[in-house]
Length: 304
Image (cartoon, rainbow, N blue to C red; front, side, top):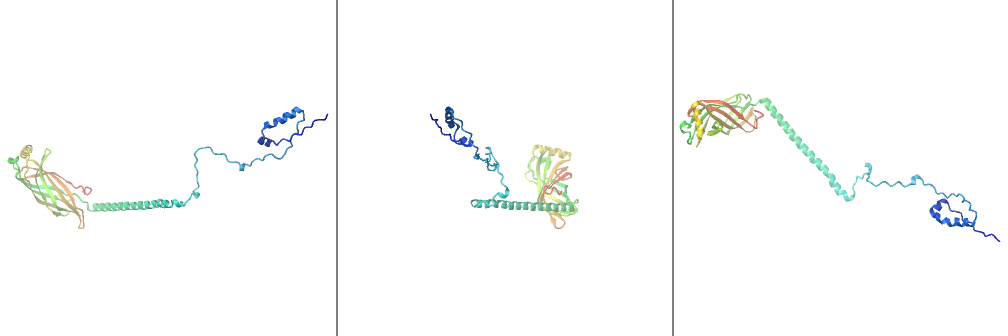
C-alpha cells in the first residue's frame, strides 16, 4: 500500500510580519493538523534581512507638551516695526500723540520756570531795597484835644459834639524813606469803656508829604451828629470825668505810599492806626494822656 504524501507547509513569515499582518490564532489549525498526522515538524525558517530598521532619533516626533499656559518670547529684532496697511492711519495718529504731549509738557515747564525766575528776581529786588533803606513804621500821638458839646448835663439826650485834635506824626526812625499821605483818610474818636463803645465824631485826614527824619503836627477837626449814649454809658462817663480820666479811642484809616529816594515808591496801601487816649474833661480844652498807639499795615508787614 502506497504511502500518502502530504504537501509541505509554506515557510512561516518573519516574526515582524506575523505580528503585524496575521494574528496568532490563524496558525493553530496547521499545527493541530500536523500533530494529528504524525508528520515531522517543519524546520525553522531561515534568517532573512527583512528585520525593520530602527528609526533615527532626528526623525522622531517631539513629545506633545502638557496642556497649560505658555509664554512665547520673540526676539526684539524679529518684531515688526512697520504696521500693516489697515492700521497705518491709526498708528500715525497714536504715534503723533507723544510728540504733542512732549511739546505741551515742555511749554508748561518753561512757563513755570519763567514764573519762578520772576518771583526770585522780585524777591531779590525787594530784599535788596529792604537792606538798603530799612523802612520803619511811623508813630502817632495826640498832642492836644479840644471837646465841645459833651457836657455832663446833656449826656442822655441827642448830642452833636465837635472835637479839634492836634495829631503828631513821627517819621524820625526812617533815615532814607519818606511817607506820602494821600487824600481819603479818616479819623474818628470813640468812647470805649467796659467793652462798650460809642462813636462820638469823625473827620478827614489831611494829605501831605513827610520827608525822612521828620516830625509833623497837624490839626484835625471832627464833628458828630445825633450821637446818643445809653444810660449806663452816661453814668460811666460821669464817674470817669469826676476821676479825671475819661478813656477815648482815636482811630485813623490812612492811604499812604513809601518813597525810597527820589525815584522808587510803593503802591498805595491802607494803614490803620489806633491810639488810646485819656482826657481829664469832656468840655473845653482837655489834657490828653496817650496810653499807646498801634499801627497795622498788612501788605507791608514784612517791611514794618
